[in-house]
Length: 417
Image (cartoon, rainbow, N blue to C red; front, side, top):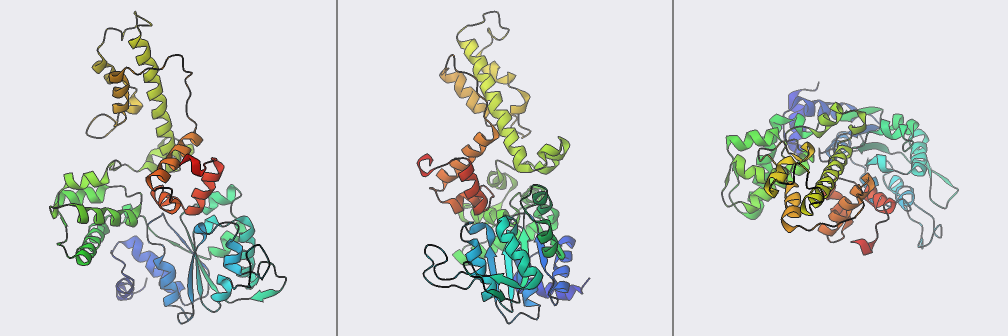
């Protein structure tokens, strides 16, 4: 381990807040590998701050006076990413009115940061592997081999080993990139840092808008530290900024904070739930779709049950004599939340069916598939953001490239939005 003073100076220089052992270990690895030319793969969930590490590596390397170029691989369309990375010749494709250098050519002698490297198409992965092995590349539309001397730092929030098994990522490229791995811890593993980060974000807002900074009471601090923080530091900053802008009371209690953490302030990790129910739910997004799928099925079952009750189809049914308010108490267990309120918000949907007596007869019971649920989620996000795909991707915790691919796979058009 490096001396604590070295790590402290790095934190001050790059604005990194916190003293957790996991973060200090990651910073120590970055500083030790910086003077070398070894490739580095930074892994961690979305929003943990992976982008700081390639900057630190470049700043403490012999290349610090050369160019540093950061490339978001997930934000570049598949049809143009080869041109962006490796350049193209005039006339090599429609719109190529002149020759252009790519990022690897521009960064010669310096460092290039490939964020979301797991989103690269397989054809581009082949080109990248050649650069890492020999420093050689070809511009699009050219047969002339060119050389570049670039240090590559990559980052991903995907499990690349699973991507290799699925045939979406090359194993040889993975080992070339992963010469030195750096794992950035999620916020829930830096519990002691959470109040410090919140205070920093709240202070920044206070200075920017010339207002008193909000403060957390002890109950709010405890709730803040027990939250799962699926969006990590990015989500915490968003919450701090919202509270600073909207709350008149500058002392924040647990009750006030809970309204900004809803509807997901359950402190149980979705990943831990997934592991207890089998490998098929090891991905928390898959688990979420499963929960929504089951809930929709329960609501459809309730609708059919209420239809029979309203029309007296089965007068001998044990529920026939029960008032509507008691029917709600017989909801399937999967619709009952573990929140303190006792009933899941979707129970209101069932109550609406009962009160309005709006029942459709003789309609086949159709359960939604996971693709249907994905389509609904994406359409809702697109409508919430007026069709802006970048903002919709951020709301869904997806990369823009992944969102574009899902839209294409699900057949979503502008007319649907």
